[in-house]
Length: 231
Image (cartoon, rainbow, N blue to C red; front, side):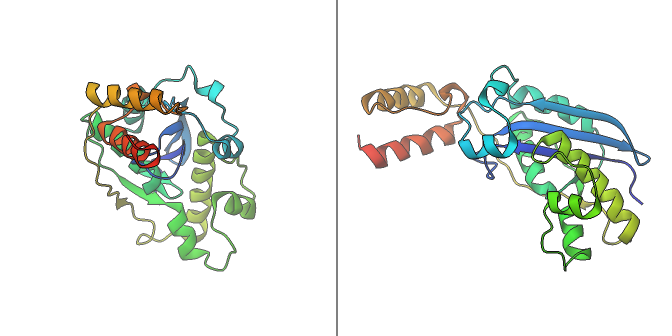
């Protein structure tokens, strides 16, 4: 059985790693089936949180004001993970956000992972839901939902339960995690100046920090403003 891994969970501003940002990271290191270390930090996304995210997670903008940016946090997280297998409930989602930042920092991040969501779909097809909170309730697992460390711990506990009930070498074997990410460069000075002019001209209330945008993000935002307001 797999007894050594890092269970990883993120809270984010949305579901697309190309456009959305991390707001909290939680990770649980397990050795010989026991938790040996945990990792938790808020992350400043450089943008305003929407109401849905605040209501779902309980995380507020005030909680993120003094938090470090992802570029400072991810290298520390990678050191915490080391060479361990990653575990997660839809692990490719969490991996993709971290991989994107690692690529931007010119850091290597290639890992194998185990997905408890895939395991639940395989072995529990008749349940009405395979969401993490439902599965935890089904098995009586303590769970602080929609907070990164709580979800990471619950995912680890769920994995242990699924291993106890259904373990076989084929289905529980770690798989290579694949997410293609291209390195993105920061917003350029001309892009920033153009955006400031458009924002001022059309009296737009922005919900992001221009200094923290990438070139691609700046281009998309500029295009949206021009499409809505014209030049």
